[in-house]
View 1 (cartoon, one colour):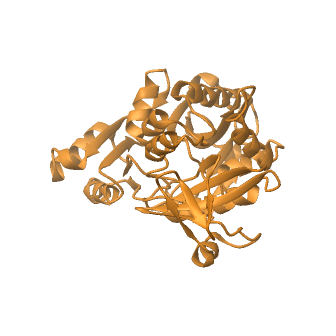
View 2: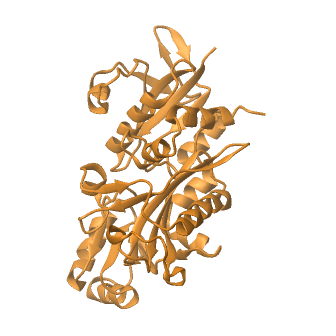
View 3: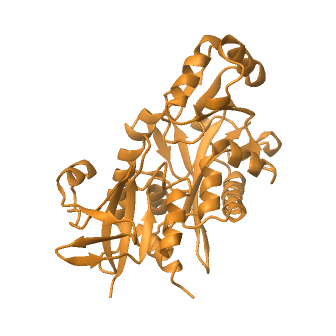
Length: 359
């Protein structure tokens, strides 16, 4: 019999719609001859299953607006359709934000006894908090940007005094963003002191914590990895090039970016980033696919990059953040990297699912 898979999407953050697109991507990638797949959408207290197959070529917006839905019974994570109760053998979480990226949903699924695709409660909670995760990993020798953490219920000093503190500690430009969000919602590259407070206010709209980070000029890259009981896979690295001020929402989701896979970087740097990404995987106790974003400083502009010989002593690899539920649309980084590696995304997802059931 086919294993019954729930692709869990939606969530309660600004990334809700992005998550639904990832769910549609995952549905298209998974092996339907091997698995019986149902998308489950979470939004606040409303949890619903969509038992109707997602037609090939139909977009996420149209599907979720028109498809039949059935309420989820949270007592056992099941749904009933035409008098028949349906349960799940496995959950693939693709929520980019709360409650699927911060450990809340993982804890629920563990209580229900349902295996799932991504990090456990501790690893999810750790990586969801950018400031805590980066400073934790700094203890293992990773380079990170200097940063300041702000909490809404303990914001001292305030106003001009706070703006001057940020400028004095981090310099300008700097980045101000939500500490518990993603996809660049509420993120601002600040160049002037008078723009610091409005940027903080904008970031607080995404959550109760804000991180202010020093600017690092360099080449931004991202690397996806996964492990099973018998192998470790590091995908080719993607270089992120945008003419925008930074890799913002428009760059990510409106095509205002060049994503170059494999990245135009020296082989030695490529190997180091892949190895360090796998090391982070082990340090945090990850599961399934994760993606780690890095910025390389001290290297020549990759647009002019021809000679692979670099003065390696000038190059530094800096950790930006760890993403334990990366986007999975057809154009997201991970599917791109899987294709560049010559792998089949269907087989990669099967690896991740079956790894939970292997002895």
